[in-house]
Image (tube, rainbow, N blue to C red; front, side):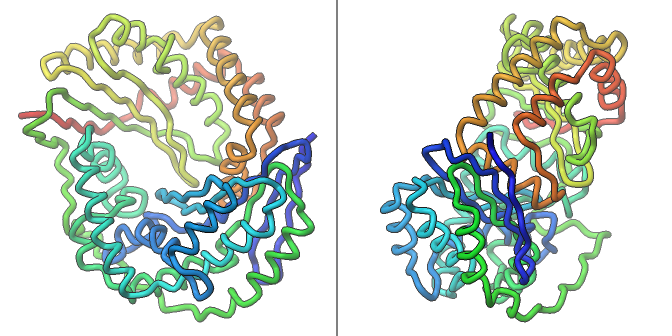
Length: 412
């Protein structure tokens, strides 16, 4: 059976591992409490920009060295940034544990060279332009901006062209010194892991991380203004769009709320991509290309999304169909048969995902970073199996009948 172990180093770095020596691989990752919600206006997009820069060399390795060594280890490594965290991870054979931890730890102290910063600025701008050209054309970002406001959880992870074009390397260095402190990070591992060796190595490699001087906190933003490059118009006019993209948002459970398990099951019953109520009413009938719902959980709040993609002429009628489905589930709740189906599907998915250390790593590291809490696979299965019709029906009444905001991206 997997064993969970954790410790906190003298410098504040937390280490958490789910150890299963039966595995053929081991996954490692640094989880940093650094995301879009932690930025101010002149830093908008900086967490994601910094993620790119962490691969651009250190005092010990060039950018080419970093990528070459990842290839040499045969590791599957990458990184991602969200509203609340940035994660750097890799999966390797257990015999390469020391080398991958050395590499990832070295990357956590990047050079942040001005020349690399200027080069990567163009890469980020191209990424923003490419993203804005793809459906649903920034509609999800607009929904978050309207629902949460254009700052905090509503701030764009990529930033805007305006914020990236005016960003300074000095601002990035100051942000790095504020957010990439050992007490604000978790080193997580899963699979065939030598935990004692991991702790010993990490303590040596991070020994001087706490000595980095803390820069001053930037001035707060003026909440009476809208950041440059941001619009809170609820209609996005897309001249070349052939379909319409409708997003609705209302309240949802946070990542700390017990309702989250019932709400996930509710989303499967109502809007799963196969076999759900919306699937049979809109997808199977050919009325829409996409008709789905899901909860999105953040540390201290959450949201419930409804998403529709269809011919512009059918938006009104399809929206009415979705509302009818939601109204029925709020009024009558869910049926035991459809809940059992959702639980069986979620249970199978949980078990299959748990077979790979790389899959287990993300839930382990994120949960320990944000809530200092560990959920084993058995814990998750117990939560799923304990769900009943009453709990899921109550979640429908609580989260599907509140005030919502609506964003439409379509040709006018």
